[in-house]
Length: 372
Ligand SMILES: C=C(O[C@@H]1C=C(C(=O)O)C=C[C@H]1O)C(=O)O
View 1 (cartoon, rainbow, N blue to C red):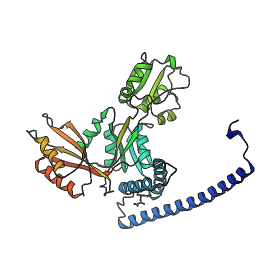
View 2: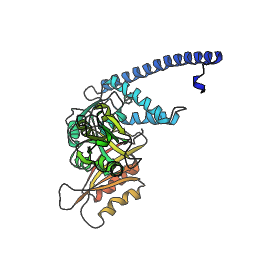
View 3: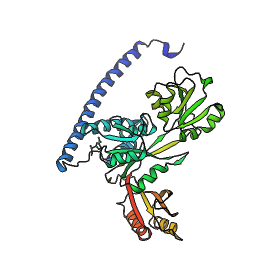
View 4: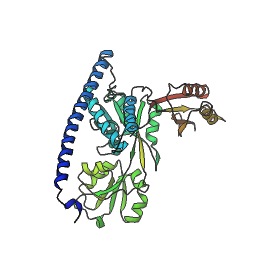
């Protein structure tokens, strides 16, 4: 007989009773402490309103990043750092919603990985608003209809999302944060679908590409049909008995589909990075990144002149992408990410050196490195 089936001894019974009493007491303390914390957040809101009644900014990305990093550094266990940070993420989310509920636009429809990223970054109390295209997320933020937006920027298997990069060239929106999400693709279908009868698999083109080897091996007969989003794929198969969709867990819940096979992505550490966009400039958090768009004259040594200041002033570049310039003529703009904030002295020196040779330098924003 296994131990769990045995009835506890008298001594064990007593200990269980004591432990449960202790848990009840601790819960009461946690309750009181969270309430006190929420009172402080409310008071912060009042002070912010008094200082700037018209345009008080409630959400502070750098402050939230610091809170989460500190939780991870000081976590005594046994809960893991990330689990503990997620709990605090939700406490902050609820506290912030007391000040004023945040509204965030994202690349929809409902159930996309971008919505999942928005919830991961802001917590469950955020109000999310689906938009049909990336540039419409930018427009919604620009018009002030929402405070922030969430857009995908790069996938570890498929590379950059060019549409997002191109929108930054012409927009004045700032980057205020980043969040990375492990992307797990599942094969899902309606409850009446027989796995052996599936003749069509719907998904977004990138997701089909990310599961190509699995599909070749397990569903070679099925036609692969690219649609606008994974959530759209899930919505479609709801009423089709011979089709399946590749999408994330949120989509299966939203459209009542059954998951036939989990984690069918070819690369086990497939992840996507998303950017949080907004109108504000973010203070230093102590662990920041900066993104730039630079256009250079099309002449010998242009790229060398662009890269040299990073070396000269010890600035750690983490990404360099080039895109054709909207002005045409085979000229290019460069997207650069580096470690540091525009308020750091070495960053300022590097930027002024770059400005001497570049046609245009646009700082997209300095923002805290993703914590969760
Ligand atoms: C409390 C503040 O406002 C918000 C709520 C925070 C929190 O609950 O810890 C942190 C940063 C802000 O997004 C603040 O600015 O400190």
